[in-house]
Amino acid sequence: MINIYTLGGYEEVGKNMTAVEYNGEVVIIDMGIRLDRVLIHEDVEFQKMPSKELRKIGAIPDDTPIRNKKVVAIAFSHGHLDHIGAIAKLAPHYPDVPIYGTSYTIKLAKSEVKSEQYFEVKNPMYETQYGEIVQVSENLAIEFVQITHSIPHSSIVVVHTPEGAVVYACDYKFDNNSPLGEKPDYKRLKEIGKEGVKVLIAESTRVAEQTKTPSEAVAKMLLEDFFYYDGMDEKGLIATTFASHIARLQELIEIANNIGRQAILVGRSLAKYTGIAKQLGLIKMKGSRVLRSPNAVQKVLREVSQARENYLLIVTGHQGEPGAVLTRMANGELYNIGKDDTVVFSAGVIPNPLNIAQRYALETKLKMKGVRMVKNLHVSGHASREDHRYLIKMLNPENIVPAHGEFRMLTHYAELAEEEGYLIGRDVFVSRNGYKVEISR
Ligand SMILES: [Zn+2]
Image (spheres, rainbow, N blue to C red):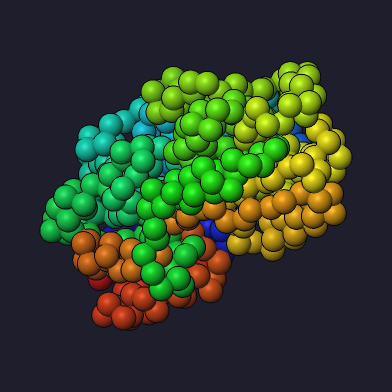
């Protein structure tokens, strides 16, 4: 019998963790953190907090239900922190268990481990290729299927069991025109569907949107439409997006080159994600600069403020996170942002109340300083309702467990599944953090 342990991300957007059990053996998929729970305590240093404390504030998943189980493998679906950010706190609970993921994902996981000072992660970590099937025990094998999302090397994780496949589709979108050239592997997904899918575990963040999520090519066009026309006549240009969104950063760097400005990426997290992407040949940084140390940031931003028309600043802080570059600018630090500047938000607001509040505060401060704001030059990396419907049709799963969302998002997904002939409680299971779904049929 297959059991699905819904450990994190089943009543929130964040701290994703799921475990698949077959015949007493367990594969863990993802170990994420919930950043808003850490950020709300401004004096808290995440790295220094013991896992017990972090569990108590709901920042990392509570893995108690599987602590004494025979865990045979840990798989990471992609490199976002809400999927790998708790590695240093949780992987030591399973000391010799190997961790698998695609190259960019594993390199980011290793960098998380390296920045950790208080826990030692001894697990062997392996970079896997799309299409490779890794036999992790006599009965269980894992596979990473190529998919598109908002970070390179994203995958749909498949746990192959003697009863059929367990497919974990968190996070994904179907992008058929990705500027980075990544493609969803429809062929393999359909094959897996034919071979037999016992359970589909699917994200539900945007399932209520009755559409198909547009391609990243649309975001590229939105940015070009602004920067190549209206933006050309502006003095100071500042763009903000996700530090891990390599495709978007690539577009911004190209745009800067094409309008005769130098792209300057400001902040440690931008340096981290682009640095590893560059190693893997996933981004071309030609013409740009990356400022990492606080001294370099201060010095260069002072120079930039004297000749704003020569630069495109790319900064962190689109959610108004405390300590991020744009937030500090809005607070009057680092750079005298004001009426000569235009801020382009190439990001939506992450739908949780803290983000919404912080973003509101950020925008208000910028407005008070006379900054022009161009919002939402962005498309989401998450599947919408009709993408989800297509995935269900391709895989034809016997059972579905909606994941990666607040309770209302999970139930929206269940509603979609009912439209496709499933029935809640019979073959669609809405769970909560810390519970187990027994797949008995
Ligand atoms: Zn993600």
